[in-house]
Image 1 (tube, helix red, strand yellow):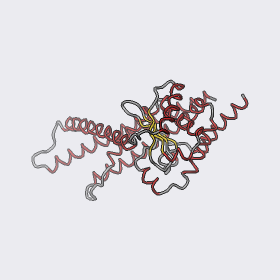
Image 2 (tube, rainbow, N blue to C red):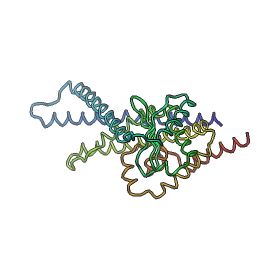
Image 3 (cartoon, helix red, strand yellow):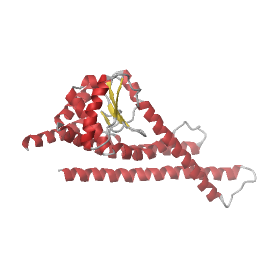
Amino acid sequence: MRRRTALGLAARAVAALCIQSTLAVAVGAVVVCWLAVGVAVASLVVPGMGFRADAPWLIAVAGVMVLAGLATEVERRFDRRREALLPEPAPDDDTAGALAEQVSRLAHQAGVAPPAVRTADRIDPRCYTVESDETPVIVVSAGLLDALDERERRAVVAHEVAHLANRDHRVMRWVLTPVVAAAQVSEGEPASHDPVARAVDRAGDSLLLWGAVGVGVFSRGREFAADAAAARLTGDPAALAAALRTLDDELADPPDRDRRERAVATDALSIPPLDRSRRGPTATHPDTAARIERLERLVERAETA
């Protein structure tokens, strides 16, 4: 069973790599084509310019400069997203202190450095990990603490520790990079009289959709893997199944405040998914029923062992 699961995860990783590689190449091609059209238009409309023999070299140099600027902006976006997701540490937070001790024990079991733990004053139940240059931070919302009992909370933070042990956040950053670059290409409202800008914008939208499929393929596999690893860490797959069921019910009809808060969140590697509107190939999380079914099979195997 484990071998089949490992093969399935490997197939997802290969598929995601192929999708995101084509996306990265396509983003570069869109940029180069945009520059080539710009040079061609300039040669026609600028008096005395004409066609330059070194135009291909000019396009190549300009393309490298634009892509370098794009890479810098992508890095800034990741930094802004990290800042938006990371709440300020609360002074004398006894709950976060108790959770941190629990997380430290789980991290020791998993063989990773213990992450920090912070609680967020949010009514929607969320738990996610924010990577940083120093110590990763597991963020747990007040809504999640209210919704789950201690056993279920332990299972949820074990899921996040499993993501860290599997290095999912580092890999996900590479998976997301071409998507963020495509978002840069598609941003803005081009003037209606500018056919080149409109074409670039439409190309960017198509690339974004394609990239979202790649993210979904990879992320759904990692969620299954983190569920299984959390069950091994706690020895209690039923607790994670119960937590997922509770959180799914809690978020069935979220209040307006939840919708506004969700706008600043990341989509991948969290419990539950921060953007529940994603469905089908672009969904970052498997269907909750499928996750619970797998966990219940683990419970059955443990009972018959």
